[in-house]
Amino acid sequence: MGASLQNLVAGMDPYFLQIIVNIGIAIILALGLNIITGLTGQLSLGHAAFMSIGAFVGALLTIKTGLPFSLNLILAGSITALVGAMIGYPILRLTGDYLAICTLGFAEIVKVVFLNLDITNKALGLSVPPAHSSIPMPIMVWICAILAIVAVTFLQNSRFGRALKAIRGDEIAAESMGINLARYKISSFALGTFFAGIGGALYAHFLGYINPSDFSFLKSVDILSMIVLGGLGSVPGAVIGASVLAAAPEFLRFMSQYRMLVYGALLVFLMVFRPNGLLGGVNFVDLVLRKLGKKPQLAVRNGKKGE
Amino acid sequence: MLKVENLTVNYGAIKALKNISCEVHQGEIVALIGANGAGKTTILNSISGILPIDSGKISFSGTDITKTPPHEIVKMGICQVPEGRRVFANMSVHENLEMGGYSVKDKAAVNAGIERAFTLFPRLKERSKQLAKTLSGGEQQMLAMGRALMSSPKLILLDEPSMGLAPMLVEKIFEIIVDINKSGTTIMLVEQNAHMALSIANRAYVLETGEVVLSGIAKDLAEDPEVRKAYLGE
Image (cartoon, rainbow over all chains, first blue to last red; front, side, top):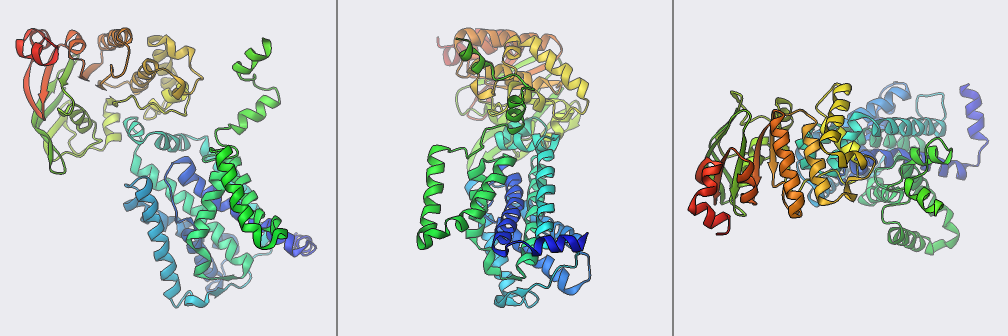
């Protein structure tokens, strides 16, 4: 099966393949940040730093050990989550702007550390050998992306997910309901950074080269834009936001030097006309069920139709 | 049932509470009255554990809860209805009630709790699927109270239930508070509307700039010339 998958991937246009993989990785990263910022309402500007931890851990595991790639991914994700929880413990007492600035500071520290460690090859960056896996990297990326979509969808509708939404809604009220704020906030941070770590490890192995400067503040803002564009707290929103923003710079390439200008203008227009994001406030499952006639239309609409 | 001894809380250099002591007995309605900034809400937040205290001791049914985290305090049977209602705006009425039962593991008990809330507040049943932010102030207050009752607390801390409500609704809300009390829940009530609070309470404490200046049977306090002058507008 591995060989036939290899052939499938080898037969695709490499440029097209690159875009597809970028989208898959963006979805994983956006879903992770969506847990922290979208669901729990904790603004993080350091998601790219967690991605870089996953990328370097994953790359080093492939270089130094013979671990199969699936295990490598889980380890990269777990170590990133551990760092996330350790960082989360002190800074999640903060809220809003203060939390955002702390995550920003943390991201800079991570970058500087990787730029100065011998093991990460300092500013030269690391060449990443091919992963120890028979499944080609693009397929691996999309397996992970689909698993992430399923996992986060389940999470959102679980008891745990409801507690996170309550924290986003009102921290004091959530606390009065008996929700352990510190525990849930740290768990949400650990889970979100777990996805960032996996995304980073996939990125490292697909590209074959990583440099600490790839994971800058701008990268974090990119990921944040994806979930804001799609609609905070919405899984389909995060998927669409990630797809659009990961592909947009490529589709706009024909405008050459004006493309980033158009990209920026698109973001501005969207925020003016859909401030809650493309799918913000839309309950996707409800919507689909209604369209299929499994659930009644909204009462208000029925009333209007009847008149 | 609840005993607060020598409670002191500082906000930076400002002393919000100075050596406050008060008590709530099983089955009572106890009112804390006083002007803005007297420290009424601070007392409730200290009891529910949301606010760290500087010194003093709080005990509940004989257990010291001074250092207990808020989510443990909810499990012990104290639930707060925070000031300004604080319903989950983007959740439906039904989901808000479900959140109220978050500390209750038994699904059947949660459903029974929701039914009980709907009997107590029929208006909430009509609006069950509506988002909480679309409710009127009075309905939100009902929801906040219904949500607090979901964990079947032994003691409810009510913070300014009359805030921003029309006089008729205030009376309705206070009638419901008496009903809740009659069904066996002890109530500690913070109010600026001293007249209403004293009319339903068994006992009351009058607070002024972080200190208890008067305390006693609510009926007596309502007759007290000082209280009438300062808080009842006479």
